[in-house]
Every structure is written in C-alpha cells, then in structure tokens.
Image (cartoon, rainbow, N blue to C red; front, top):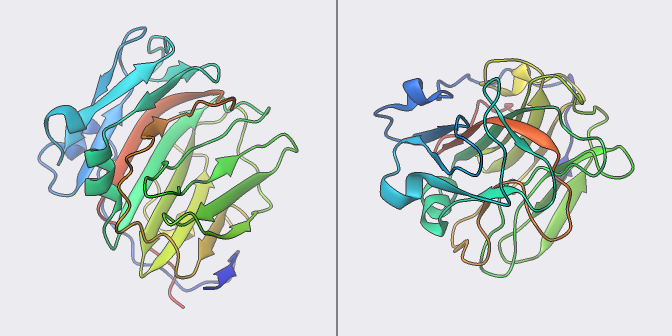
Length: 242
C-alpha cells in the first residue's frame, strides 16, 4: 500500500449529488443527514436511509443548545455517539462518505474524529493538534497503522468549514474547505487542503463494536467546535483520476 498527497496536479473527478440537508435526504436510498438543531442535552435524529435507533445520535456531557444552526462541543466530556449498526450500514461498503460542517474550531488540540472501529482498530483523521498542524491519520480496522499525511493548509478557527472523509475507487480521501454547501468532488478542495491514501479506507469486516463516536470523542481529547451538520453516505465524493 502506498500513500500520496496530491495538490494542484490531478485530473478532474466526476462530481456526485449527495444530500447534505435533512430536506434533501428525505427518502434517500443511500445517505443520512443530521442537522444539529436540538436543545441543551438533547439527542439528534437524522433523516435518510437509516431507521429507528440507527437514526439517533446520543449526546453526552450536556452538549449546549443549538444557536445559529449549530451546537457547541465545548470540552472533552461532550460528544455524540451512534449505533454500531449505523456505522456498519454506512461505512463498511466499497464506497462511503463521512462529512461534517463545523465552525469555531478550537486551535488547541481540537480533534475531528471520523469514527472509531471495532475489531481491534479504528480509522480517523484529526485537525489542529497541539503543534498547530492539520493532518490525517489512517488506521486499518485490523489495528495496523498504514500511514500519515499532513496537508500544509490549516482549518479556519472561525469560518464555516466542511471536513470530508471518503472512499472511492479503492482509495481513501480527506479534504476540508471553508464554504456553506458541501463539496462534491476532489477539485472542490483547494490544493494543500486535500489528501489521498491509495488502497486505504476499506472498513469491510469492522464491527464498530467498541466505541461509536459520531461527533467528538472522550478520553482526554479536547473537541472545541460548533457542529452544524453530519452526513454519512454509501457513496463517496468525486475522486481524482490517476
């Protein structure tokens, strides 16, 4: 397996049309969207292909009420979890997307979790560590680390920003961009704010049984951000053509 970071040089990826609002996700056969509109300490219920308990994000730590269309994750004790079944359904296929719309991202060890997998390992990417870097780490469900890439760009501390992790064409991708609408393809992410890991991101067989953090994480990590939207899809965004 090899890892490469791609900046300006790439061929055009084919854009996709994935819902990124609850209104768009109504009746979707392959996607689910959560908009964070609840009151203080309230859970959030999404719209889309999942049903029942799998649509519910359960809050912990007294997450604050929605204000201006987002809810504050203010410390390491605040987060949302989902069911393992939801992660299996949405992230274990040949393609998948996990995307968050955030703002007010904390500069001090603010970490963005993709998801923690079962089966002895996890897959995640993180932002703005103690050294001010913005990076992505990819760890296989087996627990074997497959590498790390650090794009030179940094997420804005205040701007509305989409953070996107996706798998397409057998490759893992990560990108971030400051804009209101969800990006739909590789070229929507500026050079220096995107990366690809060739042959990575295969979650098939992961049980996600140990921890199911959907937004934020516990265990001594600070997660300072306001979360507006979470999107999961069984389709990936448009990817670069090699």
